[in-house]
Length: 266
Image (cartoon, rainbow, N blue to C red; front, side):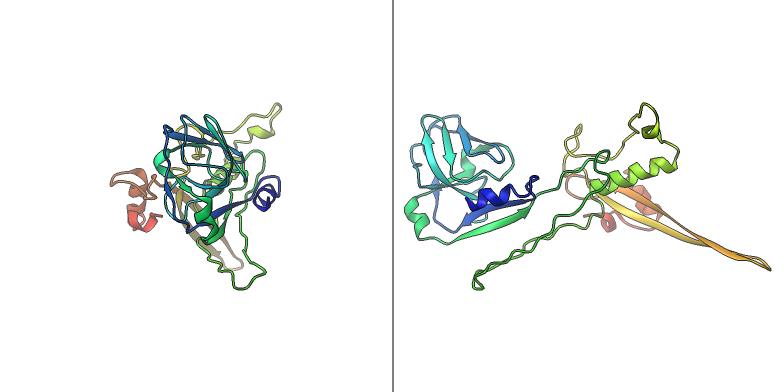
């Protein structure tokens, strides 16, 4: 119940709560080959039957290690679905039976359990929100003996596609492309990669920024005035977080500026 309440606060579900355990597990038996899961759903659909899972047992969904989230089984609905006691917090999709494990109620009763808190990405659309923020939080427990391990913090935003989208959006206004102020308004051009749009994924929608800044000064007999300027170059990284092969446009820019591709890798 606690996991369900907090996963729905606030409405955008900015935190995900998952159980993890060190309990001994075993392979799933039966004719099932795939488990269908949906984020924030109690129901797991099966394409076959399971013969060694019962109400009160726990199942790992999405892996076989102790860091894989586990869910208590509320009911096994014959022939092809399982009802969980808490809402599934992973990514919607299909999980192969090799990445699902069963933990008996007896094993769970004597094992150690923990709660993993993960910040979920905040909704962002450059045309609707005009701003984005990183999700940060601190986990504490009233019991001071409870071990709290911080694994990874939120990124500050440099190179995130949301930041690139905002900078691209604002720069078009300076270039005279102000069609959104027209009547009727028209959407501007958009080049930044956004996960889920076209072939772009979260892995390919990452950038490494290069900032070039300069200062100008003009002095005459009776006056002195100056100006500062800057240009940001966003080089798109590949799915592995690297700038790309020799000869790519990003690598060529790096070389011209006296950098190497490795300087700009994630």
